[in-house]
Image (cartoon, rainbow, N blue to C red; front, side, top):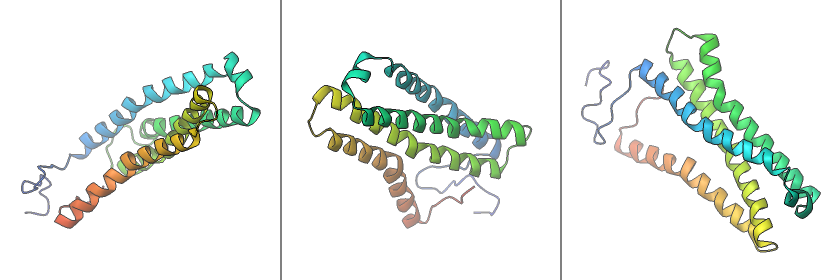
Length: 171
C-alpha cells in the first residue's frame, strides 16, 4: 500500500480513512447531535428545584448534590459547544488535523462530567422513589455502565485493532 493511500482497501473491517474536511464535518455533527439531549437534561434539572418534593423530601446535602449535577451538565455543555466556537474563531475556512485533535479531546472531556451528573440525579430520583433502598449502589452501577460503554468498549476495539496491526494512524 502506498504511503499516500489512506483508503485502507485491505482493511479486514472495511474501514476507510475520511478526508480531512469530512472528518471535520463529522466531528461538528457529532457535537450537534449530542447537544440537544444534554440541553433537555439541563432544563429538567433546573425545573426540578421548583418542585415541592425537591424542597421537602431532599436534605440540604442532597439539594447540593443536585446543584453539583447541574454544574456538571453545564460544564459538559460548554465542552460540547467549544469545537464549533473554536473552529469558527480560529480557522473557519480550513479543515485541520489540530482541530480534529482538540475537538476530540473536548468531546471526550465532556463525557465524565455528564455521566457523573446523570448518576447523581439518578441517585436523587431513586432516593425519592425508593427511600432508604440501596440507591447508591444503583447509581454506582449506572456509572459503571457509562464507563463500560463510553470508555471500555472503545478501548477493547482499539486493542483488537492493535492486535491485528490495523490501528489507524491518529489524526
